[in-house]
Image (spheres, rainbow, N blue to C red):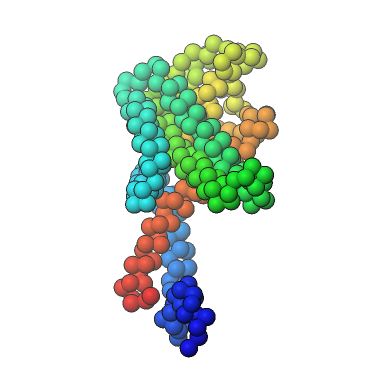
Length: 304
């Protein structure tokens, strides 16, 4: 008898696991093959669904982004996340309600864009702080402040999760509100044909007058002119292009050059951050569903 194994429960469990799966190499290879094939097929199906029926795809993805983390965090009793999720849901529900009302109130567009732009900046900053804490912990800088590595890592990962999750969810709600408001105001339509004539001093996103000239420096916000010569309020066009993922002019649908529009180099990482959020949306919303589907296939086929 190997007394070293008997003295170590972890090694005993490890030995039992190896004994249980001994001779199952073919079965494990089959499970890996099923996982790879399912991931490839699911990716193709999701891409085709998004291209052919983007509205239903976005709605289902948004619902899963909202519900899937809620299920796991409730099961794990993560009360801090549940508290922030409840606050976010209440405020966003009110903002979305205002954005979908007809007729649209004059103050609603700016209220909606300011909220989602604020949420975007908070989530971006939170994610950056979380990532910085994680990197500092990996390099041992936390020891200078006498903070335990596990505590510092938990704090950093939690902030990173909060920033990325609410960044993704906020962008999806922002896009939905952007479509509703623009179609209600009447300058933007899915077909590309504006339903109203745009005056020179009117913002095509919110429908309100533009008071600050493009060449002037505004006290609260500036005025931006796109390459198509249409002008917009700063908060409106930033929300439309970055927060709402609309890389085109709200009036004529010409493609927007964000690098030319935002000359400040510190603004450009926000665009890359938005691409990161798009990738994370797939990871959070669809990856658990795919893994669950793979486990279902393995169960039906009797694979362990």
